[in-house]
Length: 154
Image (cartoon, rainbow, N blue to C red; front, side):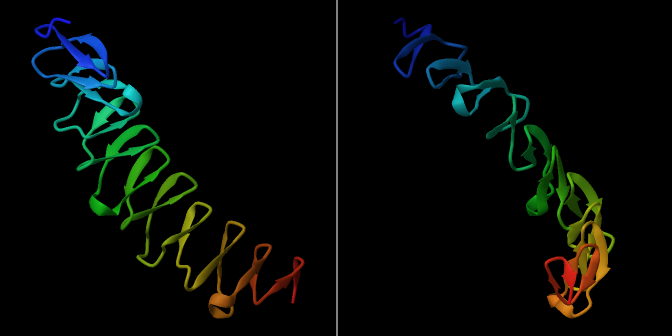
């Protein structure tokens, strides 16, 4: 091995890839333009200070989140994924892989594609119903009632 042009990566001689050559498992790469991901996958470095991989892209987790292998914007600590998109959990919820804006700050749950307040409402087969007896309300089909036994109202 010629130490001027070669580097040893996990016991394998590899050609240096510039002044900032690094190893990704047993393969060498240019640390100035590439980033080593898990499982030895080397990707082009497209962001400053990358510290994570998302699909085949590098990313910085300070301002991005990986949602289903898509690099998405991070909205601080209130960020979550909804399918392949990110959203701000203080302003929206994810209902059936769709981002739905919260119309009322108490509407924190989904019922189909609509949001509702779980303290005052209940979701009965994708229909929002008013609770009849507080938190003990149950659904029987699409109707909210006190209780239900073998799909029969009591």
